[in-house]
Structures are given as structure tokens and as C-alpha cells.
Image (cartoon, rainbow, N blue to C red; front, side):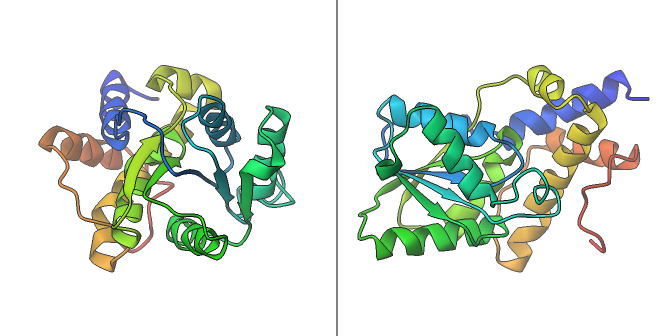
Length: 217
């Protein structure tokens, strides 16, 4: 049973984990691989709106995408963007990355190999991954400006799209834990969460929304 307090706490995490950046034109858009083809759709929309002249889709496969995206996350993203009218000449594919750090490092290397000058990046992710993606990019690519983007959805709309509220709650809790522990491991910049967000995270952990936590932390 998911309580009213659980819903309120999960929405606290949802709001915190989005950066609420104002979109603006950037040198390139980078779509971070995942199970969610919505990332490719957002990147394609940003391209059509003139927000970036080039898109990099980055991602191999994982245990959650192996069956749904057998050709790799980045390649499936590319195919979706082509369906939406993005020309193939405006897409680069990075098919090796298996985590957010590799997404950033490998995309940066690919752009350098292609002699693409980069001053700013539209970093496109799932809505609840915005802050972790941003913090990772700021750690690994500090000289460029990072503008976070994701599908413009409310928390209720996202839960409805996934059709599994408990899974969404677990993912939000897992994302929050990584914001806490990954700076200590050198994976991303440190960020201080508001007291209300920390309290919401602790209550959700105590209520058992823990399937996406990193073990041993």
C-alpha cells in the first residue's frame, strides 16, 4: 500500500531531481541511453526547434534494455529520431557507454574525434535523472555549460506513463541515494539537498522503497 505521505515524499524527490533549467540553443544535444525512448523524442524535438544542430545518442545495453533494445540504446534512439524527421547527418551514435560517466566521457571523445567544437551541451535524460546527469557532466566536463532537459511531464503523468507507481518510487529513491554517495567516489559534484528532500528520502527508505538502492551503502 502506498500512502498519501509516500506520494508527497516521492513528489519532493521528483521536483529536486529536475534542474528546471531554461532551455536555450547549445552546441550539441546529448541523449543519455536508457529504457525510455522519450529521451530520443525530446532530443528530436529540441533539434527541430533549433536548440542544437547535432545530436549524440549514447548507450550500449543493460539488463533492463537488452530485450527491448537489442541493437543498443543509442541505435534505437537514432532510429526513433529518424522516424521523427531528424536527418541522419545530424546524428552521431556512441554505442559503448554503460553508465552515466561513460555516456559523458565517450560522447566527449566522439565529438573531439569529429572535430565538433563544444561550448555548451543540452543534456537530455529521463526527468528524474536530470540532476545526477548534470552533476556527472559538471564533474567530467567542467569547461562546458550544461543545460538539462527532459520530457515536460508532471510527476502524476510520469507515474501514469510507467503504469507502476512502486517502481517509479523505487527509482526516485535509488537516484537520490546516488546523489548522496557518488560524490564520495569521485563520480559527480557534491550537492546539498534541502532538509525536506532528505527527510522525504529517509521516510521512503524506511517504508521499503529500496529495490533500486546500491547495495552495501
